[in-house]
Image 1 (tube, helix red, strand yellow):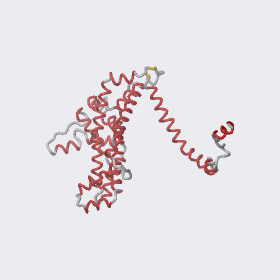
Image 2 (image 1 turned 135 degrees about the vertical axis):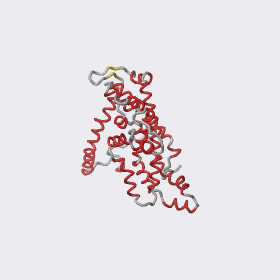
Image 3 (image 1 turned 180 degrees about the vertical axis):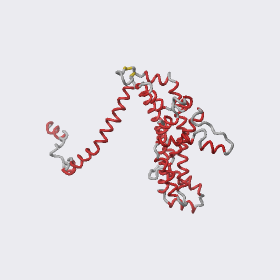
Image 4 (image 1 turned 30 degrees about the vertical axis):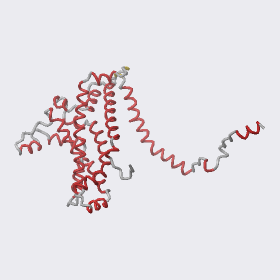
Length: 327
């Protein structure tokens, strides 16, 4: 009796693979599906190999080298976190470069956002030759950065067009690329040259806003300004957020403008005023051959960008509006 009761209480054995119902069996791939999967892996393999060899591999290696003293000629010597300690506690140039980078990002990024939004709003109007204006505004983003820097070297020269324009009002223009206090404003002014990329994205987003919303606002008596702040701007916040993130990353990685416009040997005072994180990293790596210290600076810069990016993402629920999101 006990045996029969125990046998009834015992759990049923799990069905084997052969006993599983057809709905639970893993379907076998057909010959065509296997061929498609093989083609997929073959086509994606160049990107995967390139990512592993040229991006992930060097990133892992840089973590190791940041913990060593290495000049790229002799074997690296393990020093632990000494490079990080030196950068944070015993290198005033590091903090100056970090401050200059903050200064540039804090002004250039909001300036680019406001300028792009203003231009997109203007180009969204029904005006003549608006397609030509859209092309002209986006055209500067297609010019190589080196060519743009050379153009601004002439524009910002002591006898350049900007100082000639200021002279019409009796203002004596500064030496933009030579005087220390004016170097960063010159770089910020140059950053406004590339507002066309953000303008195109914002303009495309404006075209996607339902026209019915504006018609309902007009019926309610809302002015054009009120329609912009209550309808247009909330619908543009996802694009503004995207431009904010990309602008922050690009601003913290500014290099070519400083390297081309402000040579260190010819203008040491101006170069110190414009010294940012990536030029500092470049100097430490390829001028002084302190590859380990340069790797540590690069990872500190990565942490700074990561912190600001996380802060931006944390604040999205307060000001970014997604039309399909239900709150």
